[in-house]
Length: 334
Image 1 (cartoon, rainbow, N blue to C red):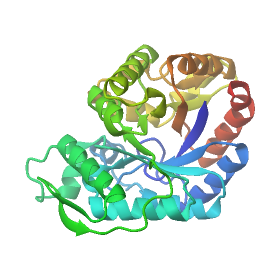
Image 2 (tube, one colour):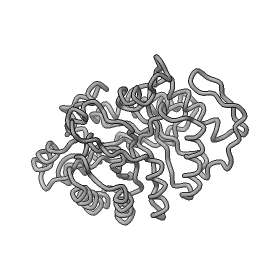
Image 3 (cartoon, rainbow, N blue to C red):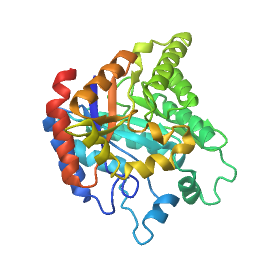
Image 4 (cartoon, rainbow, N blue to C red):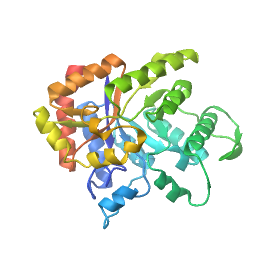
């Protein structure tokens, strides 16, 4: 099982206080993760303050950093650490430029970049970005068309597309990615995301769900992949869990409840995940309990705890948690 950490590229106000860290500290945190033996670091994608964050912090604006640029800086400052997006909001990205950016990051990192994409958690953010450009747009349709465009641009020369949302003609993009196949992960925990991953993903990167529901979706992913003639083992199952260790179960739960992730989980309840399960459904607990949870996740088919969100309120606590997990948990999981 692999482990990766999600950096605070776009988590101020949502998971962390405002301010949380300086942009340069994203690089130093990534270097720490590399020294500790993590597989990679991932960056999430936000450009605009969410409604509930504005209500929570009426006098402060969160600092959101563009993830691909941040990951490029990190790749330059590391040697073996993988870098990825978790997730990039594809409906807010123009496919031709996104393909060029992804290929360039892949090339310049020596094949250490993975791209996870989804529709984005907050529709109000999309509407603020889109303005009047896409009246009545369905983000799921934009995601599907964007994925079609992206895959064409990575593999075809020239590439053309004329669709409902995107259009380009005879685009020639060279070079192509170092990695073949390019690691395209599908973000999202609903059944539409499972289907997309089964059809075209090299990985599936859902948000947390209760473990029994996660097991059901993993089984469905594998079933559909086989039905579609794909090797199910070739699709990495890489859920994004929250992480918070405590010396005891009670201490971990009490400390977790003081983190900004609690309100964030409540704001996402509309996605079908009951916030009352957020402690049992994530890597929250004593080291022994977290090891038990990881054994369960490994048994149901999780390959990679990707982009783990560290549930803390300061950067110092963030570093303490990633070091504690690396030293006490990772060697016992393998």
